[in-house]
Each structure stands twice: as structure tokens, then as C-alpha cells.
Length: 563
Image (cartoon, rainbow, N blue to C red; front, side):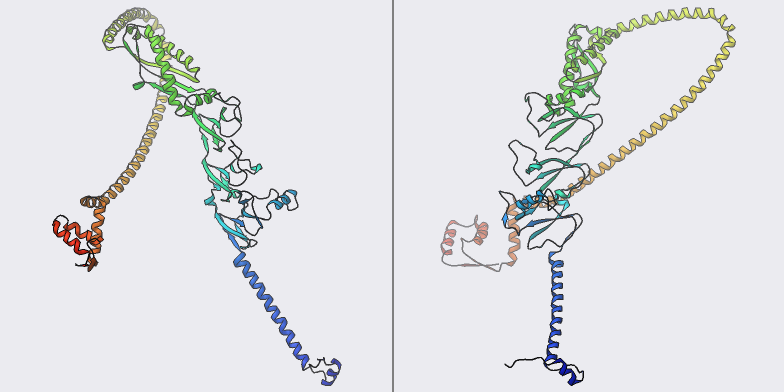
């Protein structure tokens, strides 16, 4: 091939008189322009493809109320032991020693990343390197509602030590964490593969209540045989929780609110006290005891008496009532039946009863404020006689009072003359009395008006209660209508099934009804499933000889049945 030479620029220019070059040089120029044009087109195409790749493949949109969970799959090794979650670094500074240690231990591992990504748009997680999972916060319980407390259970890390209840997050253990989550949103615990968040009711200790605290996690008690333990030990604590709203982790601590308000125990009806008198008559006592639990002894009572299960009722039935019966039988048997009708004996018995009950119950942690005996009823056979004697005594006292009144009238006649002299003073006193009476009348009017307003308020309250009862009754009636409707719908089907004997016969009837119109002919033997259908109709009426003959011939030919 001959060598190619570029023409001389000067000679060509002078020869052509400044005309543009032609020939091979022109071809080269045109080919060079096409190259750059194609290069630009290729470059733009690559850019568009790259942007499309980022927009359609790498882009991940996390909506509000969602988080992004990543599973790394481009590493060179798996996590050690049974771990599947890669913990987040304790320090996000890439130059820190902690991050370098984390990078060395987990940087090249495959697994689920503990860290979640908040709502937004992400382009830096390739689907070839990570598996991307969108998780709704509602499904993770990471959004704690009002009145609830969140308990975090860590699903990855080292197992708990023997006997350990709560996991130590600083040691990287898995299990329930000691922390509690108050109402709010916690994105750091929204990874369902790394954490489980459970909701529990917050403990509300109402006014007049105290919370008995039981530690579920802690060190073993030094004296395990004691009812109460020291602070920080497993078991019921000596101190109580005051009234208020408490967010507590049920894995670490349990709080039982106990009513410490004043209680009223009626000793009547089934709890009425009977005791024998000194003369062997049966005496009935009707009264009540006003009492409350000693807050200082509440934890001990909680452990001693059924661990707070129905503590109030237990104390009334197992402590107060037995003490009251014991006192009445011991002290009441020292008096005769007629002594309980006179007022002096009643008052003395009432005082002794209250003093004894207060002293005995105080040892059990019960403060008796008042123990009142309303009525002491002697037996009917002596009650009438004793009442007659008491009425006679009252008549004597009445006559004595009449004598005193007569003497007073005599003295009054003597003083009448002196009264005339003091007439002017009496008139002045009358004016004073009038002013006082007017003030009392005004007071009575104000009291009457207030009572009327109170009565109106009570009527309104009663009307509101009646309306609420009506709403409840209407709801119950609607529920009964729905129940009766369903029963009425089901009753015809039940009767149809009952008419056939059982459900199988009823189902077989419908099967025959559905299949009969479609059968034109049946080719079968006497031993086939279709022969069983007709055998049911001929089993009772067929003769033994004919049945044997038909069975013998069925093996040699096929019988066609037309419908």
C-alpha cells in the first residue's frame, strides 16, 4: 500500500487562493466531527441510564409511619454462633477507636442491620448489596400510646446468665431490657428482627391507695425465710409506692395498689354476732366497725394474708369478725340478759367492745377508728317482761317530774309580781327577740332554698342514671333480637336434619337430589358404589334366592340402569 502523505498547507493555500482544502484532509475532518458527536451521545445515554438506574433500582422511598430495615448480603462471612443481627456501632465517628473495632468485627459480615432508617428517600443502598424491607411502625409496637408502657425485648446478643431475668445491654445480652418506654415513638427499637416491643398498662395508684412493690429481678435475699426483703433484693419490699401514675417494667418490678382508706364493716345479716348471756339466753348484737389498714404494715400484711388477693375482705372475715365474736362471748357472758336492756350496761359494753377490738386489731396492722354497737337484742321470752319493768321505771320518773313541775308553778306565781316590775325590760327583750326571730327566718329561708336546689340536683342525677340504664337495656334488647334471629334462621335447617335422623342422611339426600337429574345411564356391577344405592331400596323386599342369583350373574355381565 502506498504511503499516505498530508498535503502541504502553504502550497495548497496559495494554489487555491484561500479556498478550503479538499481531498483526503476534508474526509479526515468530517470523520473527526462524527466521532465527537457519537461520543457525546454515548456519554449522555450512559448518564441517562445511570440516572434511571438510580431512580428506578437504587431509589427506596420510606413513607411517614414506616422505617427501612436492611439485610446486608455482600459480605464475605457470616456472623459467629447463632447471631443474625449486626449491632450498630457505639460511636459513629469513623476515626474513633470504637468504630474501628466495630468495623474490624462486623464490617465484612452478612446479616440484618440493627439500625433502621427513618422516613425519607434513599439512593445509597443497592439491591445487589442489601435486601431492603419496609416496616410499618404500627406492626412493631414502637409507637407507645398514652396510658401504656413499652417493654423492650432484645432478640440478639449473648444469652442470659443462669438465673438472670433482665438483659444487660452494655454486655450485649439478649432478653428483656430493664428500661421502660413512656408514651412516644421510638425508632431505635422499630426493627422487628432485632427487638420486640410489648405494651403493658401503666400502674395507676389512686388517692387513698398505696402500692406494694415486688422486685422480680435483682440479687437473692440475704434472709430468704423473712416475709420482707431489703432494698434491691428479690421479693416484696418494705417500702410502698405512693399514689400517682407509675411506668414500671413488669419483668423488673410489680406494683399492687391496695386501698388504705377507711372501711366500714357491717356486723349484720350473715355477719350478725350471737353470744350466750350469763343466764344462758341467746343475745344478738348488731353494729359496725370503721377501720383502715396501717400503711406502715401494709407490705407485711400483703405477704401474710394471701398476697393482697381480696385483702380488705380477708381482714374483715378472718381478723375483725373473729375478734369481735371472741370478745362478745367472753365479756358478754358475764352479764344477764336483762342487763343488756338498761342503758348503763349497754354503754359500758360498747366502750369495752371498742377498746378490746382496737387493741387486738392493732397487732395485726388494723387501725380501728370506731366500733359501734347499734342494738343488743335479748330473747323474746324475757324481752316483754323486762320492757314492762323499764316502762314502770319511766312512769315513776314521769310522776317525779310532775311534782317538780308543780313546785315550779308555785314559785312562778310568787314571781309574777316581780314580773310586772320588769315589764319594760321584757318589752325591750321582746324587741330583741323579734330581731332574732327575723334573722332566724331569713336563715331558714336560705336553708330551704339550698335544700330545694340540692333536691333538684339529686333528681337530675337520678334522671341521668335512669337514662343510662335505658341505654343499657336497649342495647341488651338489640343483642337478644340478633340472637333470636340467628336461632330462627338456624332452626329450619336443624329440623330438616333431625327429620332425616342425622347430618349424613340429610347430606346424602341432597347428593341424590343433585345427581339424579344428570344420570342417564349407569354401567356398574352389583358390587359397585352405585349398586349400594339401589340395594338400600331392595334390601328388605328381595328374596334370598333372587339376591344370590343376581350376585352370581353380576360378575359375568354389566347391568344398564335407565332413569
